[in-house]
Image (cartoon, rainbow, N blue to C red; front, side, top):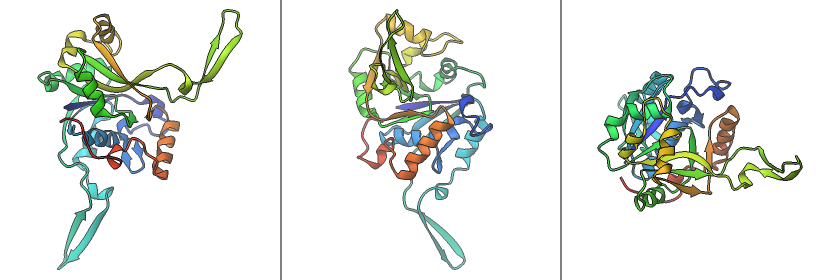
Amino acid sequence: MKVVLFCGGLGTRLREHSDTVPKPLVNIGHRPIVWHLMRYYAHFGHKDFILCLGYRGDLIREYFLNYDEALTEDFTLSALDGARKVDLHERHTEGWRITFVDTGLHSNIGQRLLRVRKYVENEKAFLANYADGLSDAPLDQVIADFERRDAIATFVSVRSSQSFHAVHAGDDGLVSGMGPMAAQTLWINGGFFVLRPDIFRYINEGEEMVEQPFERLIAERKLATYRWGGFWQAMDTFKDKIGFDRMEARGQCPWMVWGRHPAGGQS
């Protein structure tokens, strides 16, 4: 399946980290979050990417045009008769195909999806992602669940990772209970989507994808979700970035499913 990544947002809540680096290029360790996300999809056999560019799309183009795996991967350097040879121990991006599309500086997600319609409208189904969060959700199972349904769209729903405490109170103002968000029954949109091209019949110009179009799908019982109680974390703030960096430094990276079990899924 093709993978649409929405890479054009302004990332205003991460400006304290950088005013110029777009959110998809914010590093976790030595590699940008978009690389981690693409590696996740590639692990399940989905290597045909469409990047919806906007804010500082030039930097994203430049990153991939000048991509050199030797700068981040283990390699052996040999010198013989004045010539140097680099032997990479692994090639993580083998078989990747990336289409870069300028979808506008201030476009919302619905508009960005409409801008890349011609690249996916002849597919049986395609994947999409906000490109600002990581998870260890079993993508092959998410797709299989979707294909068993008569739905036009599905998304992975997750527990909130926010550190806020939810409050329950009566009309009299007395608190009847409270606890961390992660312990509540609330599920939120994790930003991992599977969509059929029929989705374009539900999106009008200017509409945000998960608002009016999803309301129409709900009314027709064509929207599904796959609940995942495992790891999920978005990179919305500088605090989130520090959290990701600490996990990477400790080698505790649940989203790196490619290092835990053989690749599966469908291409």
